Image (cartoon, rainbow, N blue to C red; front, side, top):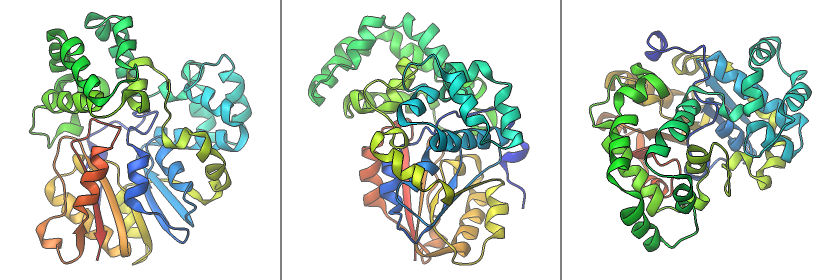
Length: 365
């Protein structure tokens, strides 16, 4: 069974140099236990590493992209070799002029393939490896060329001043939400621009909604109902670094737990269909599925769910995001898979990676 997206998208580039999915809500959804064997879509590796902090027996991270797996491999080397503050500088979460030297220290722990990949990307390393992806470059264009047409630097910094929720709503409506902001969203966060500059046109094959309207509504939520001072995703979008908040895998309190469990992480270049076909029945306890179902037809989504249920243990949890394509357990699987809707909705309300329209948590019966 061939992966549907494999023939339609380009996988030789770094598409995401960071995981743009909130590991705090992911970990609460999956409820990982020490005896668990966990599955993860690799992406850049951050959330697979966060899963290690819970001390499972094993985390298996897969991705179709060798570039994404090179990101995972360099992160693992950095957690092994570097001290905490050095890791943040290499990522770009903190300022640093020694990133080339930090990479050199990690380089000997990389496979020959990953070394070749990163040796050709000295500029990306000097910027911070968290900036190296197509998606991050999209936000760099936004910060440099688009946002200054809407708000000046002083106003941008005011957006991140500590405020109560009611004061954030007043600031957003009276200061931030002007005509240029709405026009910018309609243009820069349109399906056309997102598909060609940020993601891939094929990722929108099953999207029917107005993309910019959906994302604008979620942006308003993140800037008013949630606190921007505690949101690392917003801070990277607006500043290209983490100011007052870090994602789960980069917080100091999680560093040693992740480092201690690195030997429990495996990564493979593989489609989810091939992975599931290779596993024994009832062998996987939790599934971090990212937003992969966005890129599948409804029929293929149903087939992959059926494969997951074959390898899942009783009580296994599935967690995944919908951005623009609604995907949730089909009715014909109601006797095998239970939606944990209350938990999912509660976590979605706290999800700092704000652009997703839904967070789905389901449990195998």
